[in-house]
Image (cartoon, rainbow, N blue to C red; front, side, top):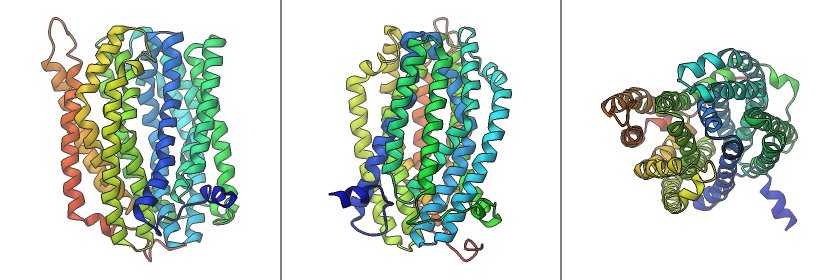
Length: 467
């Protein structure tokens, strides 16, 4: 029993054993972790919505996409490092593994300083750009500034979690995430409900919880002596390592950036429709996240599984894992959609007591049902391509869907639905457009995956082994 418990906290070798079992055992902690992450991100909205009001809830909705857009820099570094780590771990290239992790620490330290300074300076202009409601503007500005102050904790938290997952350890990051969620919840209630600090209290709770968790994760990585021995020399930036991190990470980061950029544009359109619509959209984005959990989970699992098996030179195992990851993703997504439709009103009720907001939110959810199933296909096959080393194709697919289709089509749809009842456009039009965009992205993903060029993009090559 003790030995099994210890193995649970070691890196999982996904290149051996039954593929379905490997994917499920790796994905379950990720799935629980993604739920915990959502609860973590949702606690602020629940506490603020109940103890401060709808205007404060709308403030969080305006601040969140701006904050996430800046965090894309961390996502870029993290995505590149996770792919490198999984492939080097699968190939047993421990020297390159150490250099990759050390270089990621240096890059994150530099990026944190950059993002903190520029984030604070650009908070106010960004909020004005997306037409933040006057009642929410100052609260949103304060929330952003405090979160940017704690940007380093956010960065190291996300990157070190990715490093551990790349080595097959999805359990320890889960435990730290649960700790982070509980700490954030306790601090949220204390700062907002107890001390009456409002939106600022929620921001400080998030910053403190993320920083504490980041410290633990960094110490965990430094103590993984069974696989790596990090030394100061590994912190020195090496051109081949940085080049591979950028080659793999920047497209992945840009992919996320385009999604959040589209979200900012849509948030601006929703903000113009009034505080109630803005508050509904903020609540929906939290509820909606639960429906896409399986898609993201099995996409991430497929990426790590593909990375390790690509590094080990096992293409048939990659192909088999792809089919099983897709089946699992679709099944779990279908279950989540049914659950949301059945209990969605109660979930929306966690954020607000306003019946109009709850009714509107449920109508939005029903419109988005087809998109949830299509996201599973895009996430799993996109994860496989990224895990194999091809981050460019998913980036272009996302650019087409979110920049060239979603943004202009949403603006057009809002314009065409302007009426006396809806002087700034009908809010439902945005969600119909989301279904259309997801269909286009899914078709493109299937075409690119079937062509198979992603199979030749692995970083395990003579050039990648330069020191």
